[in-house]
Every structure is written in C-alpha cells, then in structure tokens.
Picture: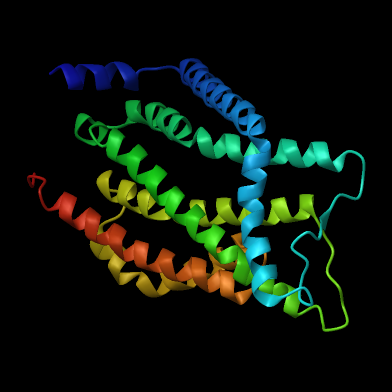
Length: 256
C-alpha cells in the first residue's frame, strides 16, 4: 500500500517540480565530478604516467626506429595546462561515475513501480563494473591501435605526438569502450519495464549486429579496424547476456 501511495504521489509531480528535481540531480553529479577532478589533478603525475604506459610499452617492444618512448611533446605554452585539465576532467567523470549513475536512477525511479525500484543497487553496481571492464579493455587495446596507426604513416615518416593528442585519444577510447559496455544495462532495463521482450531482442539479433558494428565504428576515436573489432565483439556478447538476464528475471514474475 505504501509503495503504491508513494508512486501515486510521484506521478502527480508537476513539470516544474520534475525540472527542479532534474536540476538537483545534475548539481549533485557535477559536484561529484568537480571533487573527482581535484583529486585526479592532485595526483596528475601518477595518472599521466599510467596513461602513457601503453605507448611506452609499444615503443620498447618495437624499438626506437618505430617510435620514441620519450617522444611526446607540447607545442604551445598553454598545452601543458590544458592537458592537465583534460586528464582531470576525464578522471573526475570516471571517479564520480557511481554517483552520476545513482543520480540518474533516483531521477528515473519515481516513474517506476515498486518492483522495479529494487534494482537500484544492481543497476549502479553492474554499470560501474561494465564501464570499468570496457575502460580496461580500451587501455589494453590502445597500444595495438597506435601500432596500426603508426605503421600506416610510412617507413620514411617519423612520428611526433603531442601529449594532448595522445591523452585525447586514450581518454576518448576509454569512454567509448565504457559507454559501449553499458548498452546491456539499457537492454535489461527496457526488458524490466516491459518496453521490449527477450524474445523480440533475440529475433532482432541480425539487426543488432549491424547496429553494434555501426555504433562501434562511430564511437571508436582511432577509427582502426582492430579497435572496432575489440569493441564490437564484446558488445555483441553482452547483448546476448542482456537477453539472458532479462529472461531469467522476467520468468520469475507472476503472470497476470
């Protein structure tokens, strides 16, 4: 009775009240990102060293003729500051991800029934773990992507990367892989709220395959086929995992 009453109260919120709620959630998420940025910038040298490691490993493995492990430069007086801010921004968003996801869920919750609200913790936890898995895969993959891209420049071309361009590449790759790995959470959510059924998703696997490869091609910042395949194949696997999870959860619901 209490859950139904609360749902009824939430359903009567005016547009102004919904906008006020959205503003509150955005402010809280933004504050979490800001705090995360401050922490990341405080440990900037350690974080930068961690991000540069795939490039250094590639240069050590291929030799000085292929790339220089110390060959990252800045080309302007403000690039060092902008790179530090960019690292802080990327790191701040990742560090604040649990809070961001929680604020998203709390904003969506009033539109859900009580039986869907109990999935709040699994939603946030699974999203964080999947984003971390995608980001980790991107970190492992970036070396292969760089090797492919550098090799296409030609034997007589020497590479000189700016630290800003490298940080943009690896940062966007981490976000692309992380967001790509979050799609199964969306599919499970759509099944839980009866927007789509597991059977429908399973029947649409061919269209999903095409869509996944197109999405992977669009969001992959390096644009190389190795990175595309490294992102698209796990996404397809997670698509079928999402169908299985949705089926396992929905089969336990009593039929009306």
